[in-house]
Amino acid sequence: MKRDNYILAGILSAITVVFFILTLRLPDKARTYPLFILGLLTFLIIVFLIDTNIRAKKESGKSEPLFKDFQKKQFTIVFSSAAAYVILMDVLGYFTSTMIYIVFCLVALKVKRSKSMLITLGFSAFIYLVFVYLLKVPLPKGFLV
Image: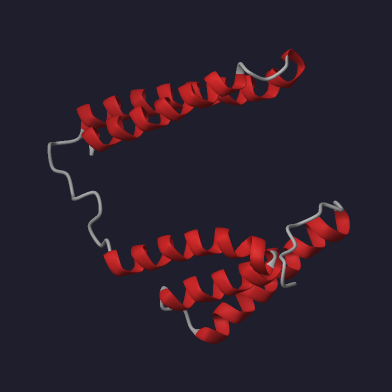
């Protein structure tokens, strides 16, 4: 577990460095917020590493596998459907592609169809209410819709 946490911290640190370099290309006034977020992320990575070291010292050496009940089929389905979702959003629009994606993922994760339909409709109604109606944020519209 300790090794995995160090790998995760390394990946997050690399991502932070990449975004820091990209942030330096922004105009001075636009840099403030991204630099704050990157500083916060760096702080949280350091806290994560300290916590990992403290927990490693407390543990008795027994550790369970990281992905004990990992199901490759479900992961592959959700990951590939997420990629298809990003592509279909430009074609079908946000709401249509989101509804298809959520229903597909929930059914693939063995949630009852009726429950997955209720979750999808509730989520879509919530997003519409908050972003379209209240905040007036334009969401992607596809070519077909």
